[in-house]
Length: 224
Image (spheres, rainbow, N blue to C red):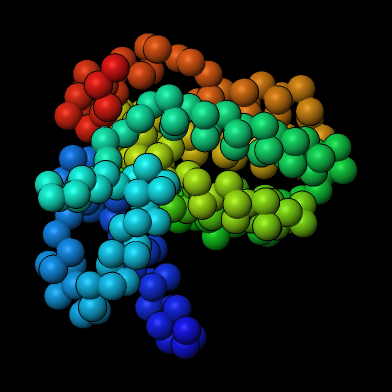
């Protein structure tokens, strides 16, 4: 396979994955291969291959003879991903904290764009730069490959975040937590850092939080 064909497949896959996780394609929406091929100016082959990959990641439902649809959000799966992220993120942040490593230079750009997203109330832009912030933390610790692995599985959780970040005050609260994470790492305050991270990833089975989002966007979730 030529490098160009391989890149073409990756571009189509990432385009569709981003469209799903950032709600350009809504949960439950019909996906039409022909329309996508025309829109992206590619053949149907890379579209079909990307959809199969996304189906394996539970982001797309393919029903033979019936059609292909964007999967609705499975809250249990989102919680599991958040918990995995919490375990890894906490260990890496605490390692930096014990060594009092400065992370300001590495996260400065992400914090700037997160701040702008809060001011303009742009949840999707905030989430993208939130991910950039944490990637910078992992890179500072020398674990960028671990970040790549967990980042690839975050789409389900990102979809929950897009909805959650629309609620009043949530963007502001999240930004404050990120600033406190930086401060605690640089101050070597392990106890405070642990407390912040314990709530930062929303990894616990908080039914109140889940109910609020489900009540506001019931059409986007798998029925339980």
